[in-house]
Length: 169
Ligand SMILES: CC(C)(COP(=O)(O)OP(=O)(O)OC[C@H]1O[C@@H](n2cnc3c(N)ncnc32)[C@H](O)[C@@H]1OP(=O)(O)O)[C@@H](O)C(=O)NCCC(=O)NCCS
Image 1 (cartoon, rainbow, N blue to C red):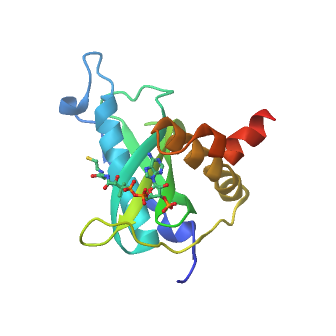
Image 2: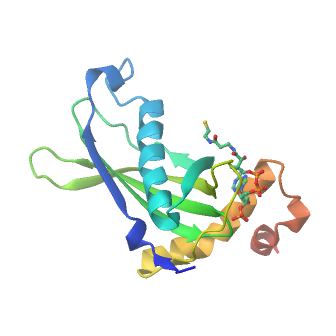
Image 3: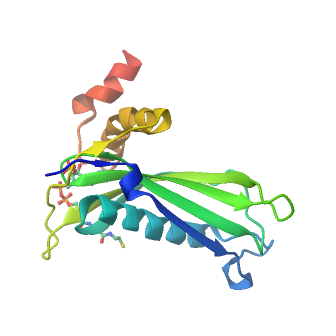
């Protein structure tokens, strides 16, 4: 199975924040951003695996900065590491300054997708080749995050989480 670069899965979705998508203080509703990120991440995972993909977990979301009504929001998703059937997808969210056009980092998130067959059974995915320093950094840390996610989901015993133990030893 041919390995692919992170860049080959890159997915960029830009859209406005409309009044129906805001909370009572006129900022983008968190669930709306989660949905936008889920869509972009699923496209990235599909581009990497060229299979049907399902969201297995949302590992991390940081709503660091509120996103006001009328903002232009760009969600960028790239596969950061592929395992056997699962893929970690890293998302960066940017808003555009209206006057300068400058991109300002608003949020980031990490999702896990699993490639499945028509019956929903997990199938193998190609390896991911990280290229830039940031892609390499995210690739390295992804196994630790996978183990943490599995431990929190009750699917892995903490004693088997070798990468997590290495941090605390
Ligand atoms: C995701 C799903 C396919 C995993 O099925 P499963 O029976 O747990 O399968 P497995 O135990 O073989 O795990 C498959 C992969 O998912 C990974 N995985 C499962 N749960 C995970 C979690 N909580 N966090 C991170 N990875 C997870 C496993 O580590 C494994 O990865 P690998 O093959 O790369 O090593 C299954 O739980 C599912 O279909 N869930 C519903 C998905 C869905 O409908 N999403 C939309 C929600 S509305």
